[in-house]
Amino acid sequence: MNYRPLPDTDRLPYALYRADQVRRLDRLAIEVFGIPGIELMNRAGAVAYRVLRARWPQARRITVLAGTGNNGGDGYVVARLAQADGLAVRVLQLGETDRVRGEAALSLGAYRNAGGVIEAARELPPATDLYVDALLGTGLERPVTGRWAEVIAALNAQRAPVVALDMPSGLHADTGRVMGAAVRASATVSFIGLKLGLFVGAGAQYRGELHFSALDLPARVYAGEILAAARIDWARESRSLPPRSRIAHKGDCGHVLVVGGAPGMSGAARLAGEAALRAGAGLVTVATHPRHAEWLNLDRPELMVSGVESAGDLDALIERADVVAIGPGLGRTDWGRGLWARMRALSRPLVVDADALNLLAETPGCGPDWVLTPHPGEAARLLGVTTAEIESDRLASARRLQERFGGVVVLKGAGTIVRGPAPRLPAVCSQGNPGMATAGAGDVLTGVIAALRAQGLDAEEAARAGVCLHAAAGDRAAHTGERGLIAGDIIAALRGLSNGLDGED
Image (cartoon, rainbow, N blue to C red; front, top):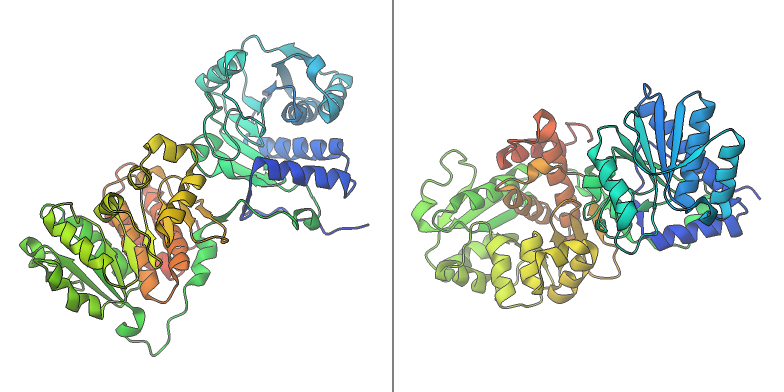
C-alpha cells in the first residue's frame, strides 16, 4: 500500500511528544506499515549527516561517540557516510560492542564491512573538527554516572562543535532535566517526533540549533497518538488576532485597568500599562498609589492614571474596565492587600501577576476567569514546594497549578508553558531569549495578555497569543544583542509584530 508521507519542512512541527510516544510511533512504522527498522536507522543517520555537512562544510575530521543502543546505531550510519565521503572518521565506543543488538548491530556491521574501525572511548582525540553525540538518546531514566559522565564532561570541555542525534545525551526526553550530566550540543537532529524535553527545562540550553526529520513516515502513523503538548510561536498564534473593523472606535478595542504601583514600584504598573496600549487595547487606566499618580504618565500621556487610597476607590474604575491586570508593583503592604482582596470579590476577567500571586499563595482560591502568570519562584510559593521541584518537571507543575487554582496558567521561563483546563493540550512557547531575563519583562507580558483579552480573545487564546507576541518581541529586540536588553525594548517591538509588519522570527 502507498501512504502519503508526513513532509519535512523548514519550520519545526508544532506537535510535541514524550519519549514513549515516539517509541510507539517507531514500532508502528515497523510493525504495521512495514518499514524495516534498519531502513529507519539509515534514514536517521543520513539526515544527520546532511545537517552536519551543511552546517559545518569545512569539517574534515569527525569523531563519533557511540553507545550500545539504537542511538549508537544512528551514529554508525553517520560514520559510514562520512568515511565514504572521504572524511577522516573515528568511532569511539562506550560500552562493549558485544552488547549492541538488533538494528544497531546491523549498522555497526555495515560500518565495519566498509572498512570502519571502532575504538574504546578512553579519551577524546586532541584534534577533531566535529563530534557526533550518539551515546544515549531518548531512553534515559537514571542519572548519568561513571565513565559515561566523564566522557560527557570531557566533551563539554572541548571546543569543537557537537551534533547530538535525537537528544543530547543526559537530557531527559520528557522534562528537559539534566540527569547528572548532559551534552551541550551545538545542534540536535531530532527524528520521527519532536521530544518535549527539547523545549522545556534545560532543553533550550543544551540542544543548540534544532533540526527535525519525520524520516518520511506515513502521516497515518501519527493519527492515533494524542500529543503531549503543542509547540506555539507567534507565526501561528498571530492568526488569533481579529482584524480591526474599518469603523472601530477605542471602546471597541477594550479597556484595560492595571492595578499596582506601590510607593517605589510605580515603574512596574507603568510598563504593564504601556505594553497594553502597544498590544492594541483601546483604553488603559492605571490605578496606582496617590504618591506618584500625578506624574506616572508624564511621558506617556495616552495612559489614564487614577490615584487610589483604598480598595473602595477601585469600584468606579472596575465598572468601566473589560479586563483587570493586577500585581505589577502591588506590594504586600496593607494598601496592596486591600486592593487584591477587593479584586477577588468582584467578577471581572483578571490577569494576575507578581505580588498578587504571592498574596494568592497566602490565601489560595480557585478562579474560573483569570490568567495566572507566575515565574518559577512564585509558582513554588503557590504550590508550597521548592523552585527546583517546579523546574524539575515544568509541564507537571503547570498542570498542578491549573488544577489547584483554575483558569489559565502561564508558567514563565525558558519554554514558557500555557495550561488551560483539561482536556485542552498544554502549550510550550519556542521563542524568547536570555536577554528577556530583565526587570519589567514580566510586567510587559501582563499588559500584553490583558490587552488581547480586552480585544475579545478568550483567556487561553489571550495567554497563548500574548506569550508568543511577547517572546517574538523579545527576539526582535535582541537582534542588536541580548545583553543590556530592557523591558522598554520589548514594548517597542510589540506594535510592528502585532500588525505583521516586522516579518517572522
